[in-house]
Length: 398
Image (cartoon, rainbow, N blue to C red; front, side, top):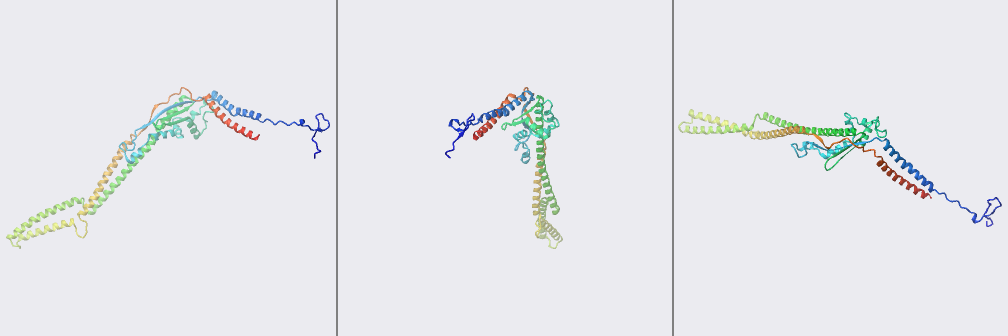
């Protein structure tokens, strides 16, 4: 194949001629970076400059001014704490509330849907934020449901608490100074009402615990009284102690009479015969006294294992002690209930406002330059990241 030569036709259309090296012209590679750079700048204008300009024009010319009302307060109240006041134990524990806990509850309650629902009776939040005077992009839709209203409200209110001092800071934004002030005041009022409703639950719990203690003490006292009454009916004695004391006293008295009568009998036998009427009368009286003494002693210590007065007295003393203890327990429970009722009537929580809300003199939004600058920085960073990724891909292809 060495005889095959590389031929070419001249530009003037003549005969084929051998190709010379100076006749070879290599095409230049296409420059892909120029359109890529033009595309980057176009994307920068579309993705960064255009949105920033649109937001700037909207904020500067169309956005409704937003005003803020701020208040600061602490939660105070007359509520017993554990180990303090006249209430203790379970009742005091039920009544105990922690200031920081109450403040934390408020921080969660203020931006919630529950507050919006409570405000419906006095203030229509949806109507204030859906006024036609507000620009169409900022105002709340007139047909917004409860969830949308709650979300809109949560975006316009902020609450925070200082964990050390318990100071709650409430900020409410609206599209007029009057609306912001009204909403802030109404939110604080409903917050105080909500806290006292929670306190009502604690109040009912405290009373319920005290009443349950009183009922248990009353039942124990009634049981002790029934047992004591049953014992009295069974023993046939109102008070075995009194019966025993009377029996012992009577035995001592009869024994004294018997001793005196025995002395008379011995004196009579010195001068009379044993069959004399006076002697027989003395012996008859002496025998009667012995029978009485034996009967009384049998009552005290009966034969055959029957319960005597000592056993009855022991049982009676145990039942009487049980009844006395039940009466004291009932008295303490009754006193605790009365004191609990008196205490819970004084329970009340209130907000001590040391920085009340006022009419805002200046709007807090819109801030076209600040907002547009922040948006520009954010979009520029995102665009730069995408541009670097695209440039890396372009370089890899080449």
